[in-house]
Image (cartoon, rainbow, N blue to C red; front, side, top):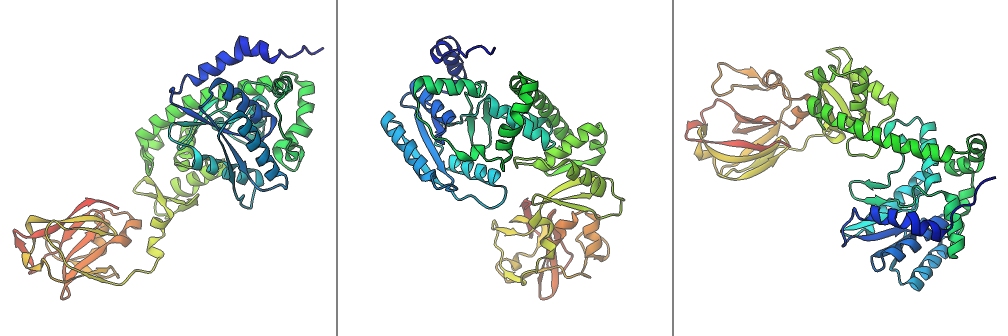
Length: 450
């Protein structure tokens, strides 16, 4: 026969309060707490506990997804409870985009949290042990790796939000008992019983079958998530070392990448492709990157498009390019422009930012203040580079300088009266031999590459 759960007062005095305060001690005395409160049993218990432990440092936020008729009533319920307890409360209506309803509702909710979080404020969520176990199981069924199986962290630091989940080790049964003992009011969300949603199906259909066979399943799955969090932390340390060795967030040296084991190559490519987004690419997308780009024939111009970026190989280096950069040469070029230069002037061009400076050898000072022409390459141009013998096709000079193919569309030619004065490139200004070259002249100096 299953033993009775300890009462709220027993656990509160012996264990939970001290654990709560120990977790909270990681934050400063000036930290305030914003509690995501849906009006459900879990979040109402969390709101009650936090207002008892940290009076005057707690606010609540109810995010109204406007997906059910009663959602406005729940907003009023949360507002009235907070008013009675003297807890500041925010009610934020959000619009949920079409698509996967669970995912879109979650995204809308977190955008609302970000909007209202103040400086030095922590977001508290009421996820409990069964939520953790369900998350791990659903991610396992979706084919997640170590990071996904880490599930939810007790304290989770993201780019814009610090989240704290104090109830994560508490069972739902214990929460139900405490809510009854403390006589805390709450609302019931019928979507928690709607098995069209994966989590509700898992809870209503699958959970009791597995638990009847494995009574300690929930504890075991929760423990696995903590083991995966340790493994993920170790893996991230290795990945940071591998990334520093192979390159940076925009490019990887393929010679160095191939010195790693196959497993480390896959993991590094996966986290590198993720960049600053929340999710890594699917396993088959990483395989496509290896097959179609990295291991393609030397003369192949393979490119893989994923999540707004293009992945291309050039000179045995793998590059991660924003879509607008990679596709820029497919866009129509604007008209030629006419401009005047003055010493110390800074100009922003497609190839970079330049500053007009005096130079031992450069363009005649007589050209300062005169109208000069700046035009795009059209193909077939030739250039006599200053200090070089003979005239070269501009295309050959660009290839010899190993300017990336996707950056060649930024190159512009400076001229006056059809006389080429020089070329603006991502590597700097190339001075052309002409009657306007003089000792003590001036040149545009590249000060930052765009």
